[in-house]
Figure (spheres, rainbow, N blue to C red):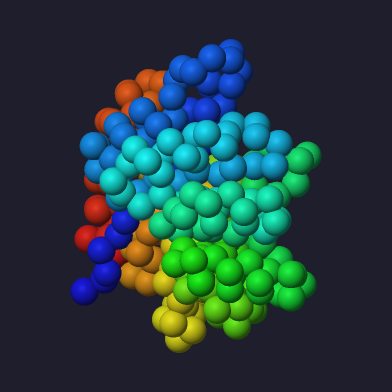
Length: 249
């Protein structure tokens, strides 16, 4: 039997809408509570260097308000490490970050950045925070993550989702095979396997069939869909898609 599949809801873009106008609404903490009530297993938020969406106070309030795990996405910088050690979220996902990008582009360079990343993984681990590495679906990246001592990897699904969106069936098949091979390798390396980036109802249903994956982290699509059907219904439909994919995988 495959392991149960969890849904982490990313509330970054609730904060994006709030920041476009200023003030306090819509509140990402309210969105997090609503998502949990609708079936989310945890909440993800990315505190960026430029604070373009989530802000420091949002992270503090999320940690205080939600009863489910908080996954703090962060770049491997001393400033973010200090904040994470103060807030003590359930988990920290180390991600690449550039000011010029619209969203996270590609996985973390865990091979070239191995020596830089190692003390971050160690210090967070000593503080009782589960560390995940947001990586490309390659065996080399997984092996580097395992050597860093990170217990979790999150496979970057963006290239696959882009190929699906552009109806490039050959590219989509290649990228899905990469994800499938990487997910299978996590078992040998004793890594917990998560996945995320660009997933919608259809792609979440498809990737849920991979039994090694135990968590999907989804944000932008759910917040966008909430404009039309509401956040709670968006989360419920995503859970149903995941469960269908898992059942028929």
